[in-house]
Length: 239
Picture 1 (tube, rainbow, N blue to C red):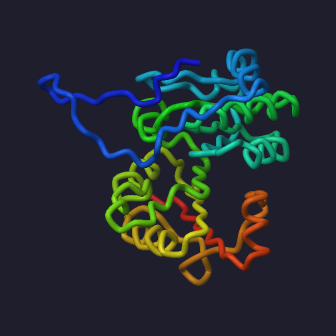
Picture 2: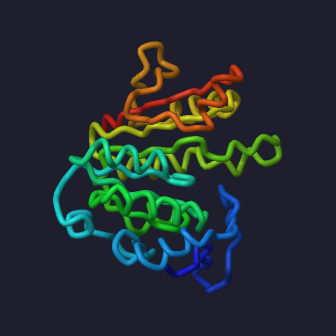
């Protein structure tokens, strides 16, 4: 795996430009198991970043509905979804190397053939590697809410990002978000409602009940016991 998650951007004169990142790069300490998985399973399930579109049929060896998950953490729910939905292809993106290693280890143990993972900035992947109108679903579960007001601009759910996602979804494709921070949920809802081309799938035009397609995480179960809320948003591309 090439460890170059943060790649520079340059203007037309070749000068480096500052870009606000929506994540904090956390290398973390790899366990022996995670390192073993990166060394041995990455060549099979890992996908290196490139600046040209990837063909999903070639990548997965078949044509099937494709789900992209951004920021899969340690990968437990992603592996569960891929296991429960063998008829679908899953591509996961995560910038935390230990999480990628953990996901690879679990995917190998589950003998999955419908899962591929990346360790790179999701925005750059969407811009350069994902073909337009190629995804059936994009999932963004529990992204960093950037609680402090001065950091709100770092939230990944902003108008340019959701417009980028829109272009990568097929007509009828769904952008599914979830957060446990109500102010961020309200921010997501406002951004999505103001972006042309999406239709809110909520019957109340705000949030949807957690769909069965999104597994409960240990973190979320603990939050439920403490009375914490979780807000799911699902928006369909209609044009």
